[in-house]
Image 1: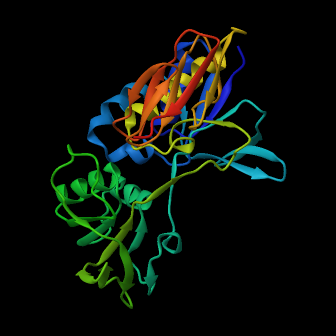
Image 2: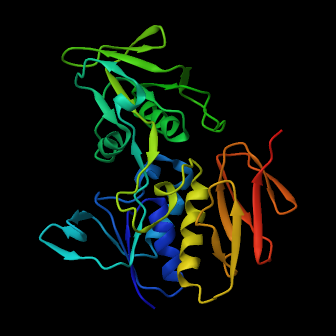
Amino acid sequence: MVGYTVIGAGLAGLSLATELRRLGVEVEDIEYRDYVGGIHAMVPEVRGIISGMISEVDVRLDTTAIRVGGAIYVVWRGGYRKLDNNVLVATGFRVMTMPELGIYGERPAGIYPHHAVLDMLHYDLLPGKNVVIYGDNQYALSLARELMRRGVTARVVSPRKPSVEAYSGPEVIIGRVKYVRGMGRVEKILVDNEWIAADTLVISMFKSFNPFPEFKAVGQAAIETYDPSIVIESGRIMARELVSKSNDFIVINSELPIYPGNKVSRDTRRVIIPCSGCRVMVNDREYVINGDAAVIELPDTDKVSIRRVVS
């Protein structure tokens, strides 16, 4: 069977590559960092899963993909090659910019995107001594816990209460970061109407990121979810869709976005519905989505209707 190149060796890319390999498909997984795991690298609950996956697939580290004109190339130190159309994207989240978030003020040293701090910690470096992490998700909480474990004072500022109750430990301040003050280095941060002393601000607010939208994507490159199990399942679903030899499909009529799309092979019969806290009807059966997304097994019919239940 034809081989694939997966761009990204985070949880989604590894899940996809692992499943394709198990299904007998040639696959290479490329990662521009020199370590795997991506945004999940500091989430203790999934480290073991990541370790198991990399024992099954070949990952090319320090390797990236770039667009030149109308072509996509794989580039590594000392070489490059042009990619064909058998490309799958697992680039995950991007960090939102300060203008997007409405954060104003000076631009001193000590302001970092989330991924930059992951890289620092990988090399046993610390971003600062008194750190504020601006994020409303489990990755912000996990990063705070890891910094605290290394002796750093770390607090999380979140516009809303994070929904992950299991991640206890760091102080969570409910509010929005509005202004950063500091000439040489961050000195204080305005949260709503209160100034907080800090020497570091880490931005951990995210948006899905797919720099190659012409190709199929998995995980957080396609779905805005903070649930690692959903990220893993997206890779498995996509792999099975790619290898399915069935011409028998289930057509989905939905008023909600559906992953991997509105036509799914009967071999797979599973979709992901991203809709935080929703109630949905799948034909005549009701489902409650307790997190930000849910995996739904479709009924074995030719057509399926999915609609949101409005209270």
